[in-house]
Image (cartoon, rainbow over all chains, first blue to last red; front, side):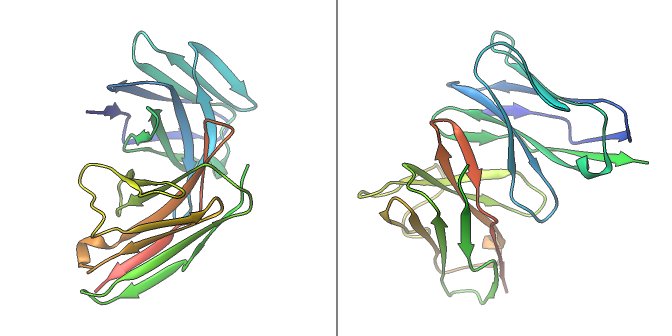
Length: 107
Length: 113
């Protein structure tokens, strides 16, 4: 089976940095996705990691360690619009999603 | 990326009835998927919609309850049959692009009374 864990909630201040961790134990692994989902909207693609290491895309970075079954999403220079749910998903020819981390950005 | 539309965007249905949800993509895609997101929960894959053959269902989902059609590479439908209040959920279609990126449609919010 698939087991994907991420924290339920995180709160941070505008302009700060937040790191959302994701650990996984899955029967197969091709890569790991991060999605952002605002309330009432569909998930939007943020990043996809296949190899170990850090991928940077503007204010968002994603890290993967395949040997440790671990990833994190780093959100820098937080803005109010970053308040959303962040979903970690493992690609095993189909996507298995974690429960999501709700990030609240406060002024 | 791909532009995905779904119809209807929301519906309120009575138990025992069926609803068919349509998913249209603006380009031909090989992979199309249907997900369910129950209130306050994450996404669960229902099935992979295969063009020209029967859909591939995940554990816990069966064709009699969730029949799927995929007549071509830009369109798919999901039917939620014999609905009960437990089927109240958001149903999303998604497509695979460039081998690994998956994009989601806006979702269909279903309430069963």
